[in-house]
Length: 190
Image 1 (cartoon, rainbow, N blue to C red):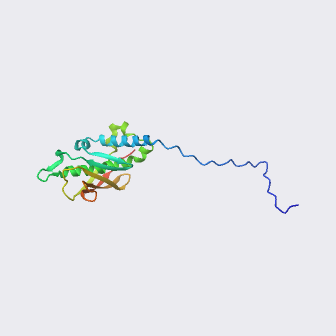
Image 2 (tube, rainbow, N blue to C red):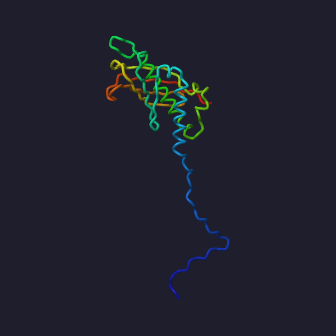
Image 3 (cartoon, rainbow, N blue to C red):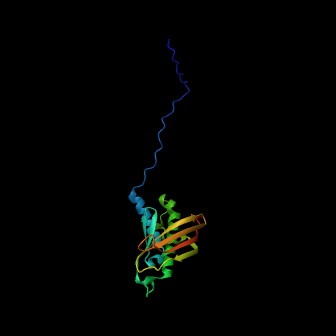
């Protein structure tokens, strides 16, 4: 006889456990589909506001980061003696960058999940835009007669209220010509 203990035999009512398979994640969408959805959403957002096209503002997307571009045009000059970009144009450019960034951030999750297609809802674009409560601009130097760039950062965003900071530059990202902080009322989603 051997001294090794015997393993207990399973009872007839005992069923062996099925082998656990790791849960499979759904296959990611092709990159072309994701890029197209993001680009068409951004295009619908920008094209849905006539004032953006009137000023000639363009928005470039790299991943989830947006850069607003104000290509230089003679109609943007406020003081022909310097010449310098009009302060109202600068303010509109920064506010536009803030509104587009805030809207982009607020629709991102639904857009990524495929639940929102602004390209097909062009008549409803304005309902997705936040309303400006206040907008404070610091003019740091004259806007020269050349292209300008702006990036906005959402500082705080809740269901009803959001705060955004925007910086604008021309030749050198470190030499801002204007910056702004805005507070916005978020659209109700009901």
